[in-house]
Length: 310
Image (tube, rainbow, N blue to C red; front, top):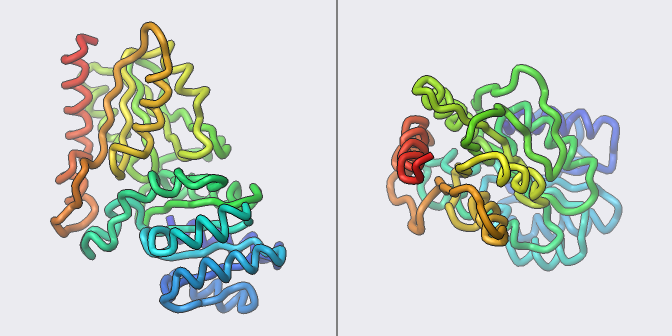
């Protein structure tokens, strides 16, 4: 995803000289060509993410479109006060790009696990939150984030993700993508975990269980309209996220269902519990430790089907 992001940003920077990329002393293997081609549009501020956010705010006030780039937690939680007070309060054109959402950097331990970021960032006024699922969505999301004025949080994977689409989907900020349609069950996901959701769907399909799959790449603004449609179409909604089960996609859906009177579908939220992941390992290992492997997602859906007699 990070390579897809930087390739699109380079396309944009060739046309728009007001685009700036700031990094907190990271991404040398990925950003080297960008820095060489656009020396006046690139700035390495060092290991100083709070300063980076302040500089980004100042540049935005001077008419620049600024992208800040770092690993998941570093340019978000490490400088949350600056994001809130400098960027969001002034509604500035700053795009916060975090690499390694979820357990992408699992082998580096809890300091590099970005598993609370969606909840935290989506709570800030004016900040739009986008988490694409693969390289194709990342390319489309980068263009959309650039073309929409105001502060954004763009949550990406690390690299090496699979291509999930044979053709580019229609990508609109705040509108989900229907990946598969049909059945009494709808599985909703956000970010790179869509690959596991698609594999889980195939497991269920081979057992005679047909499900819809939607990529909810935007947490804020949220696609409330699609949830309202699903309420009248399905018997079970499942949310899957490589993030805390509270505060992210599952919470958004549960808020809508809580305000619905009368009949409504059951809801299963698959995500991380209220504890830190103390184990160390690669992304797939940690996904399995937290119930996010494809077969575990499928098993959770089957259990919920049985429990609700669907």
